[in-house]
Image (cartoon, rainbow, N blue to C red):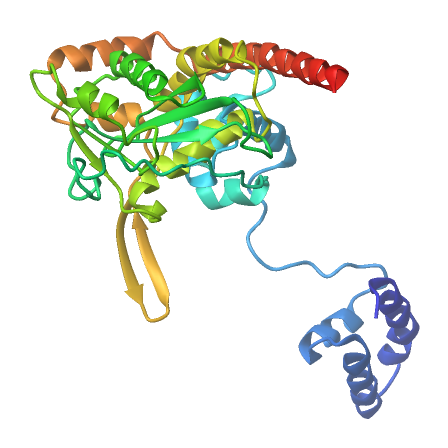
Length: 385
């Protein structure tokens, strides 16, 4: 029975119920419960209410008004639609830079007091479909590179996982742009670079550029078994000519969880930004690297919190997982005792020179330029087809 029909039925029997004796009321009440599927106590309360009165719901009063939702949504979009737990941890940092005139002091306090579950109830999330895998096995040097799960017992920064993302669209034919993702296991600090194809020379060039921007010493590197990593040139780059060679390991074939730290960054740091379009214009590499280096990576590393899995225990048929406190990669590094005083000072000065909203505005301008290039490339391809 619809809600409207229930209301009409209630209006029809309410006066008859009030003017009946005890036995008659019992019969009316039984019939009312059977027709409307109400519990007997609720039905008694509804029938005894005056005409037109709504039944008040029990529970706590609403704490956060609708006037907070526009500010919360604006912040959420600026913070790259992060999860509620991360957003609750990031709000104290972001609100220092949030300068909307419509936000009062009391509203600012309410935003700071919001729990992660409240933020989750007020915001919705969008999931994107997955793309194609362009990993090709590299068989020439596997015997020299040991299989090892790199994240075992990592207690300091410097041990990185690397992977590539193919911007191939729906076909792997021809040349297209790839994104290299490198993430630090301890701090979750992540760097990205775009390359034209994924030959060893271009991967090494991107890694060399990333190494210059790392705020810590590079100690170890783990990758999958793709040919862009399994080659002599990369092995020589990581080990030869260095006072302290970088340990080079590979994951087990067909075991993506061995590379779980970088695999999840392929979505949050690459797909969430550039999507699944085919990018086969070489001119796009430069603007993509400007976006990664100058806007996107600083925004995520300094102002977007991450959550790390601390413990995982099977309880019956379920897996109980425990996570640490949400913190940005910057704060994870600053809390580490393994950074030198010089590294810590440089990192702190860089943090103080940044503003998340300025980074976001610059990112949006560059993304408009990028999508204009993409639009013109599609028009040229369509005209030549």
